[in-house]
Length: 163
Image 1 (cartoon, rainbow, N blue to C red):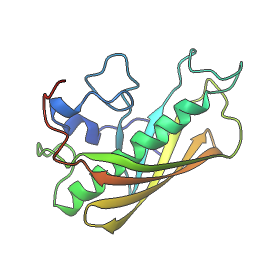
Image 2 (image 1 turned 90 degrees about the horizontal axis):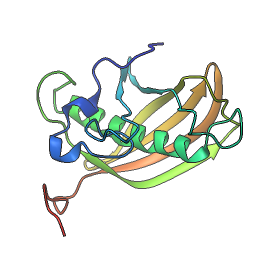
Image 3 (image 1 turned 60 degrees about the horizontal axis):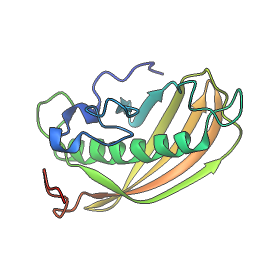
């Protein structure tokens, strides 16, 4: 299994949509999660920071939820981009997704100091709606499972609108 995502879908998002706290490459204060293909599955790898602690030695559950959330929307974007005939790195802007539903089940406490791997399986359930099931691993141990229903970002999310 890969240890680094080389061609992440988030690298292809237009600058106006690259500010998400979880996966926005332009958000210097954010997590900057990166999602790519690992065979037919998707993968996001992230090593939690010291301050992302729940209790000493264990990762904060909200971080795990954010990982599953952004992995889900990134995975949906990867899948539709591929269905449209493109891959990250092709220079074509991919479709952007937002979360319609997020479900997280914590299987066991997530140890700190270990890179986390979110592994996703994607299913199209409608032309504009995708389901991504994700398992989060610390080493070989599954610590959380989740499901994201991702929808294509509505046109009402206009670029550079303020107020």
